[in-house]
Image (cartoon, rainbow, N blue to C red; front, top):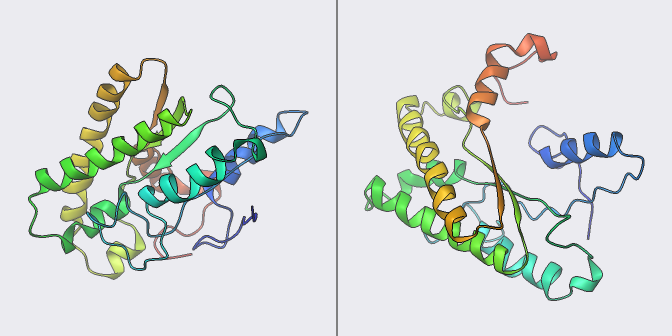
Length: 212
């Protein structure tokens, strides 16, 4: 598989590389490997939350068309197992943003459909051998450059993000009840991003208002 480190909108490494770099720096084995199927602009499924291009790898495509054929059906080529692998999953931003495109759905119906597919795909990962999951919620986006520059109503984002982030741990809890040997870690990106933005100078950050 091709290694791409600096293909983000900020021209820096994807967040998973920061994680692996730190882990590898503290291990003499330097054996943390990353298989990243993420795609910018992706939603859980384009049937619910449209994406800007058919080339975007939605969560559905990542699991069914990329992960399973490449990592499960030919598992001998990539020797991972249930104990030594962590599956990082970060969805919700594009699902929330593209809500405007699907005005025929109530927010409750929209969220129910999104989470139904979200956790169906988690179950498919589980059935393929995944047992350790890192799930990330939606960060605080009201000051994000694309929200501000587009003149989007921040109240729209805050309302939908709050709803998504409130429901996510409830669905995780229900999933855990039926998948008792799974380890699920929920990372609170909302509070973390807000704290970093409010205290950006402590982290050597100079720009928080414009796109990098």
